[in-house]
Length: 124
Image: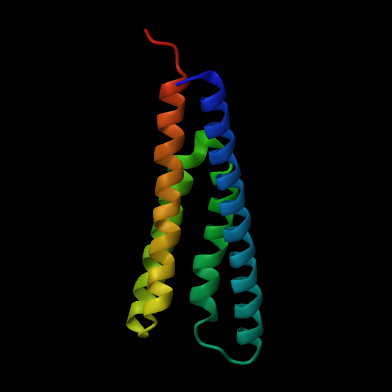
């Protein structure tokens, strides 16, 4: 692989990571706002949404930094699993698929990032 090709792949993955984090952070913030509004109206699920959205937002921010990508990714996967289970229990199949997609994207970013670092490392 040429240096230019590797540079383009590094930047493509970096942009994907940043876009993913921006989207997840915005979605988490929206979920927090919605749950606080629902809590004010007596919504029962607002505590669960806050319980999932706050660590999701913190993990998304940590996911920006490669040294924390595995720990942050693990937190994100746990949040998506819990949210998927709750969504499945309520019959919201589309939400379950959405959480699977979010999880798959996080896994892809981590796996590709680690592969790129290995490809860029000098042969020993």
